[in-house]
Image (cartoon, rainbow, N blue to C red):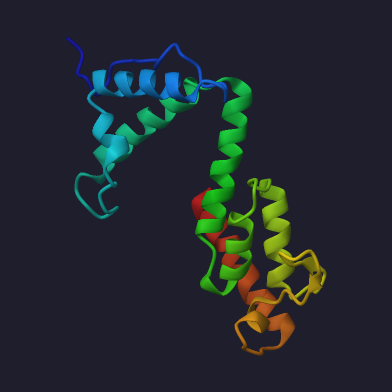
Amino acid sequence: MASTEHKTALGTTVKLSGQNYILWSQAFKLFLGSQNKLHHILTSPPPSNDAIFPTWQQADYSVMTWLLNSMEESTRKAQWEDFLVAKFLSGLDNSLKVVRDHLLASDSVPTLSNALARVLRVATGSTDSVSSSGTTTESSAMAVRGRARPSSMRGLNILRSIVILFVRQS
């Protein structure tokens, strides 16, 4: 008999469409319980330096695959895009907190390219971004925090941080 760690499971047959969340979530929860993985979505992951992390990560790959397979294609694409935006924004340097908070407070999640463009505008000190009131304002992250550094140096350091962060997360 094959180990439970290597059995193939496709997930629930109820596909998340954006209109059936309650039904889908109940079906998916039952499925995870049948695979002994319900705890995986209810608890925090172990630290990456913990000896059990590789085993947890393998289970996480399974759960993520089941999640993706249980969504209709259009829903999966939208959720994946939202996930990438959230991951990108959550990893930003604290000096970009103002733009991150502004983007996360929006009524809808921006596209990844829109989020990146807006962060880059702030990071490079561009003055053409729009504030929450709809007016054009100085959008420099350092100006908002009351620090002054040469614009080219500030932009270069923040851009370097963004690129390093994005490469590490990819």
